Image (tube, rainbow, N blue to C red):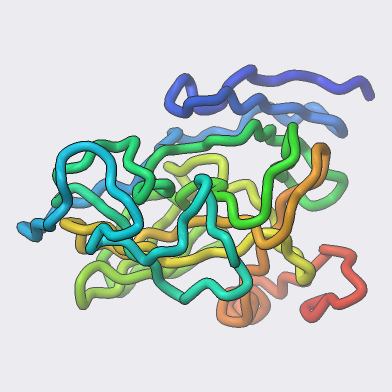
Amino acid sequence: MDRLLLSDDISNGKERTKIPVYNDYDDEGVPNFVYLNRCVPEPSATTSRCCPGACDENCPCSSNVYKDQRVQRPSKLANILTECGPGCSCDIDCSNRLSQQGVRYPLEIFKTNGRGWGVRVKSTIPSGAVIAEYTGELSFDEMVEQNEHSYGTLSGENDVIINATNQGNVTRFINHSCNANVFAVRVKQTGDPLEHIVIFCIYKVYEGQELALNYGNPWWQIMESRFNLKCSCGSTTCRYS
């Protein structure tokens, strides 16, 4: 079957670069969801000492890990980073707001052979680069069950689920692999109680490669027990097949 372009930009102009959708295998159409480029809860009253304009490495909001628009040592990255945010005087182009600036590298969504939709890169992406924030509807309801398109995090002292089933962005299509090339980090933004989930590259990813995230043991425990789901990543180090 010939490669078919289903959409030239699934973000509908919400990202700085278009994200096309291709189907290489069957006649399934464009996935039905609302594109949401950021999780935006109500900001808290927190303020910062940021100066108007752009911050440098001495900014009190910074985790001091960004340089040249990426994380310099992704393998040494902490479990949570801090960035400037809505409580700061700096603007959105501040070098300490990388995760808030949307998709910077050209990506495409494509239909895989047996693993649903996936995301691959259209040009080389350096290690430590931000792919995008994981976005979705925010639920503070403890009775809401997690599913294949959800991610648990915190907002202040409260548990919250980011559910990308009906609203989300390109990251909702990143498949699992036990040999991942991207990883998720929690990012605190000054003036925002939500701990955002942001996807970074572990290694340099080359043109045409698929992005893959290790969903982790808790996710697989839920999926195996509720849906008898097995991993089909094909990695020699697969843990969930």
